[in-house]
Length: 327
Image 1 (tube, rainbow, N blue to C red):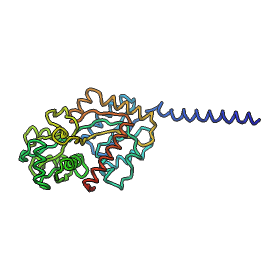
Image 2: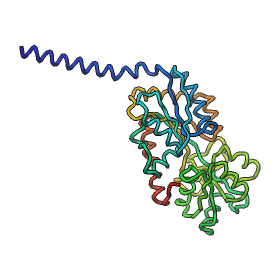
Image 3: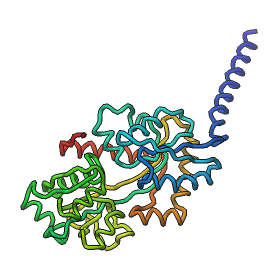
Image 4: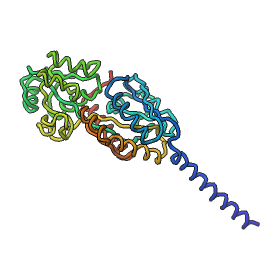
């Protein structure tokens, strides 16, 4: 009798384990079976929104379900991030996140989410530089001459950025540290205002978006000195990097990637990752991305997680060294 009971117990245990395994695989096998939302934390019409709306229909083709872009602007993108972080971990809510999410995660201690704990990396999508531009009146034809000038006039030269913690702000502060100079950051409400201020001679320089500076460079309103990536970019191949212009090891990139709520099954993350990789590398998509001054750059969920950890660590170090404070 005892032997029979033990046999029944083990049979029940095996059946239960198999059922659990099948249940855990079921979502991935049937995924996706309804529309997917892709949230962005910025208003419609900007670069992030444009990228999302180009990627979404291509993802729909690969996944077999509509991918709907939703704009949830406000609080420097944290409203959208919180919404995704608190969504069900089923793969039906995604976030297209820009690199400035890292600085806000470092600067602010009152955020209603933890970027690493509450979100699951899916894939990096694109990465690119800012470009260091100066007003033509600045007597520096290259980065080495700018460094000499800045050292001779500490605290007198200004650079513009689209607010505290923006990509341009980080690029400038890293330049200060590595070049041992003291450029003063002047925050503006947006990158366009910073560019206009440089063009008008109100400030001497800016670390700005590659695309939006192009008309000013061609018109002679700016002098482009260097890009902030480790390699030159295809949109302006004649412009050197800061690394090759006298600051070895300098790199400060602008990137976009896709996150999901923490806890999404690995099989679903892998499926989303594969779809994103295919879409980003479609010839027409690659052409669009390069025209934005960026480069297609995808990786695995694990690699993207390691990349985010590294970005947070490096940004935290920069924030500590510069004493950067939130608005």
